[in-house]
Length: 428
Image 1 (cartoon, helix red, strand yellow):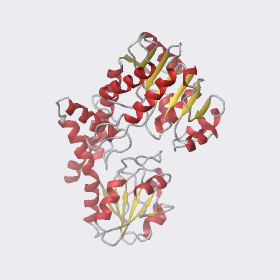
Image 2: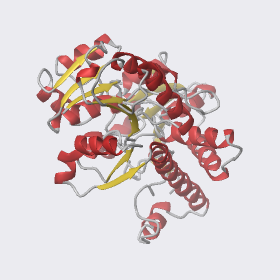
Image 3: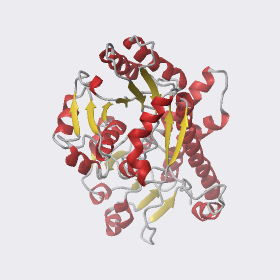
């Protein structure tokens, strides 16, 4: 099947490469000429395990990239994977997506074949209506030849390729039977080899499944962090508590690792968008608001723990981990951002380290020091804040000996405590 993927960010690039790996002929379309050149050269424009290999294997064959919409009508399906940034009130700005939808509709105007436009971006029902209108008005189609469907993604950064190729569920949101069948055909190679749950529903429901999925997981993380904060007050190990409650199949063991909170491009943005959309309809969701409030408070608790042991004013403090999670270079909504801001407010000299995310964080904080290794970051520091649970932080060993004050505040339960360290776990 010939497929277009418009947008080559985290979602679009992974989607394009994985669809090519399933045997489809994929055209990636993006306005960024450097991204297009990288894809055509067989290089991934983002850091994601396994993605480089897929792009290198399929570039120039089943995967090609361009900045032009000219060849859109040659395909049977066009996925829209354009970023939808958040506004100040938490609602999403669908204008970039609607613009891409309109351009897609314009090049489809006058074609005779059925064409399925699939929204892969995460958008609310009102925004979906805007995108659908943009496509159909541009095509002028009144016959049902053009259909707009939704197909939300459930990929985790750091394991996105694995998640796509071994899905737990695939959600297909379409209004016409032929559109559902065409979406099923896209995923047929996966469905033949994996026992994935397939949800067939309408476009609005499909999108709200995505929002509900992320809101539930974000709330679960905030709840276990809240419980962890209580445990810390009583000197109880929150991880031992979590292990026990995770045995209850009504709760489950996943997403019970308490710490400094969630970040990334999905959970913060999607929860805020769901709240804003609900409030626009006249309902204020108290639990979702509490989840955000708790998540925003965890970095401050981490800084408070550090200040119980050292005065950081004018002192060197190491921040270990800048990506929002291990396995990615994505720093969007990383918990390291409020940590660094808090240290700067306290007049500390901040040095950051991350194995892959330094350049992305440098865009947020161009003036702090960045180290090339954990040992370099720790040298002479009066404290270390562990924000991302990269595996290498579990084996730092003697590197802590070069600190001026060996104070470690661990936000991810990754560092091994020792008698030589003043060690504090955030919730244990």
